[in-house]
Amino acid sequence: MSTAHDKISVVTVLPPPVVQSSRSYSSMWEAKYDFENDATTMARLKTYLLVEVDVERSTVPLAAYCFMTGIINALIFSAIFIWCGSQTGNTVQLALAIARLLNWEHDFSFHLVDQQALCSLIAFIFALFLGGRIGDKIGCKTRAWLFLGTFIQALFTMASSILMWEGRESSVADARDDPAWSDALSFMFTGFLSASMGLQGVMAKRVNSHFSTTVALTTTWCELMADPKLLDIRRLIASRDHKILTIAFFALGGFVGRALLDKIGSANTLGIAAGIRLVISVWWLFVPEKNPGL
Image 1 (spheres, rainbow, N blue to C red):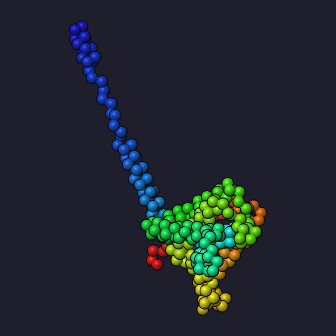
Image 2: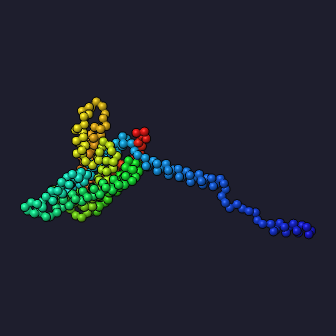
Image 3: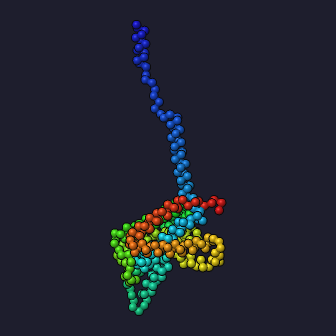
C-alpha cells in the first residue's frame, strides 16, 4: 500500500510537458520564401519601370501628345489670343510691349494680354527646367518618368478645369482687346496650361523621336519640306511620315478642341483633356522596352 502511495506521489510531482512555442521549421521556411518572393517582385517591378522605352514603338502616345497640344491651344487662343505651347509669339509680344515705352506716346501701361503672355512664358520655362532636371534623375526615356510626367500634366489640366469651372469664365473672346479671361484666376488657368505644355515639350524632346517637341510645328514644317524623301510616296519613311502625322494630329486636336468648346465650354473640355492625358500616362507603361542590342 505504501509503495502504491509513493508511486502516486512521484506522478503528481512530475513537471508538465514542454510545449514548443517557436515556429516550426516549415513555417519559418514559408515566411522566408514569401519575403524573398516579395523582394523579387519589387525588383522586377523596379526593373520594368526603369527600363527605357523603344522610341520606334512610341508612336501612339507621342501622336496623342500632339493631339493634346491642338486641343489646349484651341482653348487658350479662343479666350485670350496667346499660344501656351509655342512661346515664339509670347516672346515677341513682350518685346513689343517693351518697345512701346520708346514711342512718342510713352505708353507705360502693362496691358492685360501682355501680362498673360508673360505668365504663360514663365510657367512654360519653369516646367521645362524642372521637367528636364527630374527626367535626368529618373531617366528621361524610362517608363517611370514618362508615366509620372504625363500624370502630372493631367493634374495641371484638371486643376485648370476646376479653377475655370469655379471662376465661371467665358470661353470665347469677342475681340483681341477684350479677352474672355480677365480676372486673377485667368493667370492660374494660363499658368497651369502653359506648365503642362512645357512639361510635355521637354519630355517629348528627350524621347528624341521624329515627333520633336510635340508642342510647336515650325521646326516640323521646315524639316518636312526639306526632307529629300518627301515625294517618295511608294514606301513608308518614318522620318517623313511621323512629321506628317504630327501636323495632322495638331490640326485634329485644334478642330476637336474648338468643337467641344462651342458645345460644352472650356471647363468641361479641359476635364475631357485631363482624362485623355491620364490614358496617355497609363499607355506609357505598356510601350515595349528598347532593344538592348541597339
